[in-house]
Amino acid sequence: MKYRTLGRTGFHVSEIGFGAWGIGGKLWQGGADDESLRALRRAMELGVNFIDTALVYGDGHSEKLVGKAIREARHRMFVATKVPPKNRLWPARPGIGIEHVFPYDYIIHSTDESLHNLKLEAIDLQQLHVWNPEWLERDEWRRAFEELKTSGKVRAVGVSINDHQPDSALSLIRTGCVDAVQVIYNIFDQSPEQNLFALAEQMNVGVIARVPFDEGSLTGTITEETVFDPKDFRSSYFRGDRKKQVVERVAALEKDLGAADGSLAEIALRFTISHPAVSTVIPGMRTVRNVERNAGASGKGPLNAATLQVLKRHAWKKNFYS
Image 1 (cartoon, helix red, strand yellow):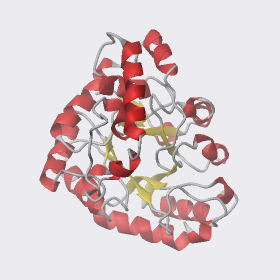
Image 2 (cartoon, one colour):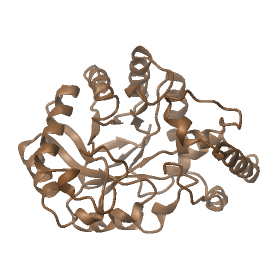
Image 3 (tube, helix red, strand yellow):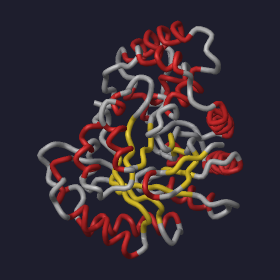
Image 4 (tube, one colour):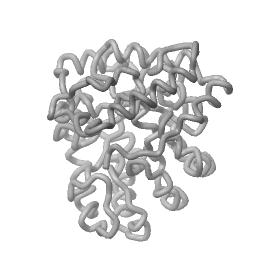
């Protein structure tokens, strides 16, 4: 496993992190706590030292599993979590004031709740789970972040940027008030390369890349016949003719890649860590098998320039979250 520095935090984090949404258990089919814990432990054995969770994942269940696993760790682990929007709206909606989403007291209380679930003295990175640039000049989030850091409850702060809206955080990064941002970045959504990455590097802000597989599209395992449990988040994400669109896009991608070294999933992961602005990528991992496959991508390193040039042609402007 290779490691990178998460912006100005000084945290040396594994370039393949552990995305812990799936182990929360409510919006993903399959999986069980014992299997999730085995996956977490195996990830740590393979050198993964960065785990991203959130208070809302399984109403705290993901945080509890993460806390249990890291208390057994033999090496330094870094934990990131998130404050959910009080109005429970993802993404943040234009015109809705921060007092309805992230009031000062609510941010503090949510952080205390996460600390209780994790059973940790401090959270390495606390993030707001949505962001709206209309809140930039409000003091609720600034005061809460300052208080949390001063009190020692958190070591660093950041935001998880709204789906497919990387430029919405540019003004926030320029304030110098956040240590890291989390953003969707994958072969299909390459938009953070346009403006966000350069600014993050300039301001020494860490970048956490999420959704490297486009919720499964870039694993090459989605077919037109794939059926998800109605309770599974992906049954909505891939509704209508979206599976057909994915199959066609992936077929074209694989044809262009030809005999490229590695599976599509491995290439998708290596794509994200090929950009120097990215500190870590956080694929969801609920099984030991997936942990071993994903962790192995770090050893192969960034993709070569020729492969990256091929992948540039497969950027796809879409929003399946809407």
